[in-house]
Length: 416
Image 1 (tube, one colour):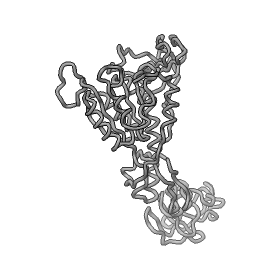
Image 2: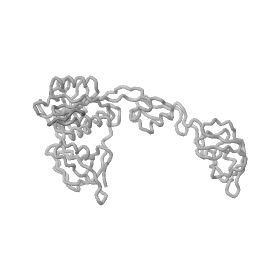
Image 3: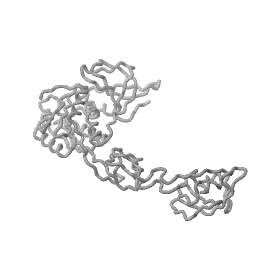
Image 4: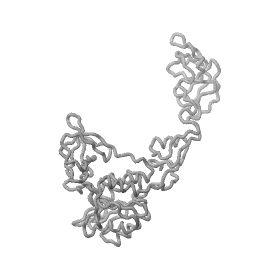
């Protein structure tokens, strides 16, 4: 197949031209299984929260006007007529000159409009001496002051975290409608790749990519389905690819995309449906052999076999598509500013991504230290790198101590 390298920006533009993100539908999820899911509809409150006026302090429910003029030297004396606890329905009415003992969270009794804190009072038998005046609604949370009935509490497209789940629970919802999770088929190719759990023979390697990529799919809001290791056989690869396309919303392969005699993946993808391969090689380092196709509108990313290259290209190009299929905001990867710990060279004519680890120097400056890879497939690079520095095609190098932007693979792991 004729190879025409696209620039990184051309590759992104081409993907955008062919990608048609579709709404995958919604489903009902019980609340304890709705964490990190995306709402498919607005949540409108069916009730006021709180559903009653309640005390925000331990103290005494009173009529505020009865405490006017109270101070340490001239307290106001009220009659205590009862007590209220959390969860009790008030059966007491506060009349002029009366007070009801109340705890935090308990409903306010009829007739009372304020709460005097217990530390501002002295209780003797049935008499209460109030040493501080209060105003109407002081130390009281009004009905509906948190959430009003018919208010839109959560909006369609929001990702449900622990606080959002708490809000849904406060509304009494046992389940909620969420968007379906995009299914991403993940498979590896190559006669040297061995599935985990099998004996590793000389010349073989374990299937690293399927597991790192599958985890990255989960981080992006997708559901990975592992299709195993496919040998360098055209018929076998075509059969597995066809099954993957039928059962998934996106397919990601690794290996078999270079120019070797058994690198069949691009040919197979191109034969399965139109438009087929739309990106055959990108002018980047690492990740040059990456090919991208679309079969019946479904994206197929064929990543290099080198673990670092595969994961980098996934983050740069595949991750945004999964986020969009999942209905999630396509926020860019987090980045921090720092200083280059050494000179970083670019590959001539290719956009270069230099893996770096972050450390603080003695002056508390954040230093981006290039990770020694030896080769783009070095396994330890995945664990050692906190992120990468991007060098444009027209830049020869980034000099030591030059200020750089580091795009993070995860939360900053800088070490002092």
